[in-house]
Length: 258
Image 1: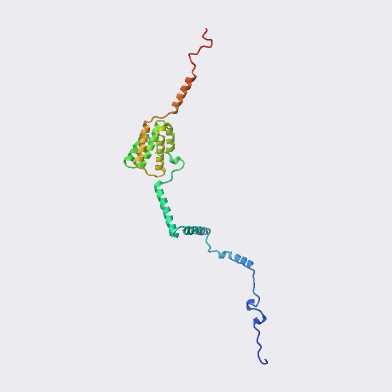
Image 2 (image 1 turned 60 degrees about the horizontal axis):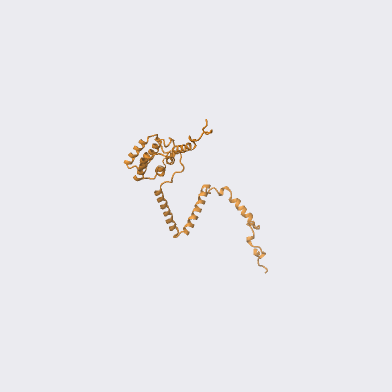
């Protein structure tokens, strides 16, 4: 109408949304999804964003703890009673291990070495080892008494020349070698050597009966007669000579005519 003030048409009247413009009146900047992600990754890979990241060791520990927690959670879900049941099972296993350790002692030693030699100290006679064994037995020190008695057995066999004097010999080796010369006591010798090993290397305690068995073996070996291989060989040689000797009654080749 005449006299009215003309007003500007709103932006929507020209079909343009206000959000379609930037702050300076230009169109918005649009970036495709993939380039935008790559640009964000490049930006976040800068050192200033990783100054407070945990070190390699902490990441490894976190990874281990995560997997251990996952295993424990799986075990708790599978065990009756959940976490309480799993705790009870772990405690029972720990008690069982302790009981076996107390009952069986340490593991038996492996192959013999220089550290497992029968005579750890200087040379002593069989009588000296027997006297030391009786002293320990009188004081109730059965482990030490058994050790000294086993040493007395081996030293006595060496003094009788049934075993050669060999530094570094073990109780098991002595028992096997002595069993060849004294086959009637081979089993008892091996048993005594086994007791010696268990006391010396497995820290297993013995009582008076174990010591008495080794002492009785020592006394029995002192009265035992060895079986010498040369005796059997001599008898075979005598039989062979008797078979090959010519007969004195045989006729001379010329029939006895001179």
